[in-house]
Image 1 (spheres, rainbow, N blue to C red):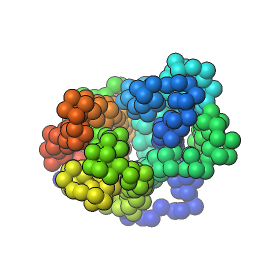
Image 2: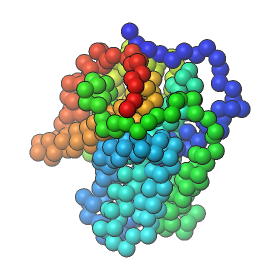
Image 3: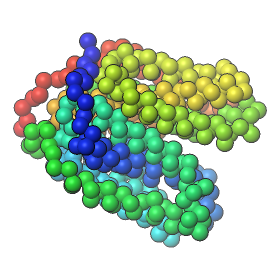
Image 4: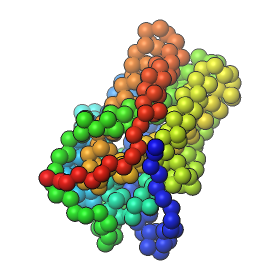
Length: 400
């Protein structure tokens, strides 16, 4: 039996709007600093004479940091609280992200990219931990959908408007563009202290490492890896796959629709969050559809293959929101950051390593499809976990 949030009253718009805006803006900055790098990579590479490997590391290094940095985020939440942690993480993110625009060489570029990734990684568990303090229980699912809408919109904004709109405003300077994208986050960090609300009881300092005895930590993380590995992996190998299929000329359109689908997913979840979040059946259906969509990119031809990839991106985006929204619904507020951090640690470790393993296999065989098959194989292995998830809210345990 699954839990699902009740919707007995509608949120008072005037009271919830400022909080919703802050959650959305924080969500946007979970992705803009990461996905602005691929758009600017050719200019950075030319200026700093980067190799192909180092150029790719501009994107893959922050993704790896999303896994590594989850633990410092959990520690900070247990010591400083979620609001202070989120503000601190945003400052760290800005220092790293804007710092990339000031670097003199490759080494400092990689260091600042890692610092930026650490800040984003610390933000991830802080947001779900903040929800029970800013929102009443029957609004938590909606709050999750709002900041995840910001996250998925950030993916599209960072990748989609940097080159045509933002870079021309700064004389086509990649350095000034990075700084311009980064500095407004300091205003968001300061604004986090405006809401005067706390619906959760104050928590004493307690454990912060993931509770590996709680089966949810590993299960939610592995299922998050299902969504992440297929999205990041197919995004990475799209060009090679289309070239092998003889439709490389469609790459720009394919990537556009692939990433726009994430925006569609976030808009759908704003409407359906209270119905789907907390239901095991929603997780099962969305996971199965994600696998089906990825499989379709291999067995279909022409535009149908691209349409199948786009469908997968949309469904995987909805699955991401459903999974990330669960910790504040399932455990006490004091445990939310801990569970979220463990989930992100496992999920992004898989989102990084499974596509990389697929790339190694495809290099060995010379067939890009084997990289996609590796992601499908992983997803099929972890899919049974969705059928046995225990989504009953755990009774609050005394802290100490």
